[in-house]
Length: 80
Image 1 (spheres, helix red, strand yellow):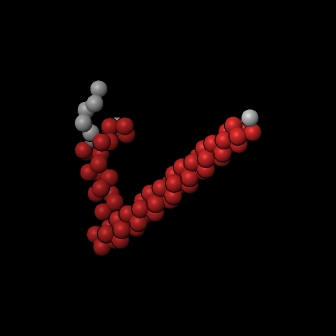
Image 2 (image 1 turned 90 degrees about the vertical axis):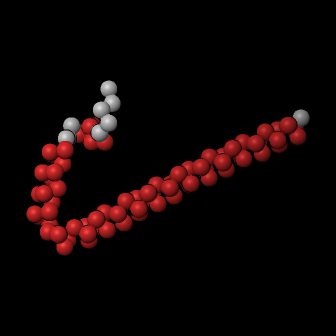
Image 3 (image 1 turned 90 degrees about the horizontal axis):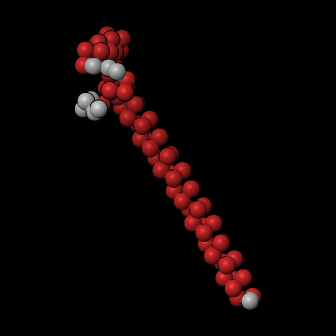
């Protein structure tokens, strides 16, 4: 049953999340948090870009295999 929480798969509630946020704030301080968030955002962006590149390459290879198969079928049909 869906409870509507994003972190349900981690079995974490609001209290646990607040505790984690406070611990992060105490460990890194208020001035370092924006830098950490920017770095995390850049890392996520690079990962997404890389995964999109892999998807494009896979689709390009699949399409080239399909074209090769069509050419072989055309050659076989022309030889008959």
